[in-house]
Length: 368
Image 1 (cartoon, rainbow, N blue to C red):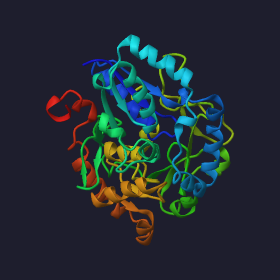
Image 2: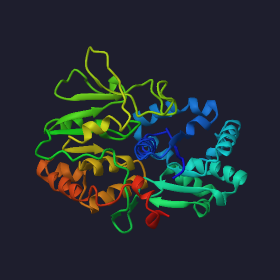
Image 3: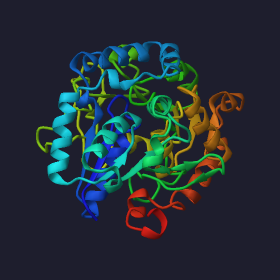
Image 4: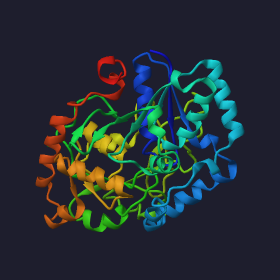
């Protein structure tokens, strides 16, 4: 198998984390693979505004929900001089095998196909949500036939209520439900978006919490009943680690009152997963990467308000499969732990029923 180029985005972490998981899993199978992040190929003034948008979306989820309804033409932001250098390097290296997580890359792939012949490219468009997310909706609006040149691969088949394949966060036995503390993992995805902070007062009456915050201003970190975690504010997905020259999982650490946090990363998976795999449930908006964490760890999801229609469909599928429950429904049952355990058991029974995408790449009869 030839070198795989994994095209992802760091705008949020819903594409970025699965892409790095896949890069690691391919390398473990002795397949050369490289993750390339889209934001390194946009003009500087647009790139500099990402942190501002991240802050705005964190403090006002309604603004984020409105923004995703209006697909933008990302070509207005592309640094075509940088792209030309990238494509020249790909051409010299004879790169032909691509796995695409973000729709923004379609324009660049089409340019590459014009240089080397699109028929010579082997491209999987890997969808981690049950419906098109904003970057894919954007390219669909401006290039309606984009998928005709490539191969679409859906991890989840919402129409038939199935998991087709998965990108596991780890390949280890699930923690038994009885062996998990009365603790929840509470987060808002890579940008800390959603209504999760509003639920803490209700949840803390019943559970201890691992809360992922965007800044220390989000919570009272002196409340020692809970644990608070945060990505290193200086870490950016599009910057490579100086030690390895590769993109890294977020530097992640515990925030304690009066102590300097120690942020760290690891090669195999994101450190948030180490909290999720031992939790009774994930309380979060229903992003695609959250579904992958849930399936890999057999940890149920309690769904908060979705970011957009694609996340609502994610929640619908997980509810249909018996893997998750809407927050308000759980609240009506007084946050009963007894409602969660059957969801864990259903996940446990299905967590490896579907093959991993990395393994499918080796199976010509299925994927090729």
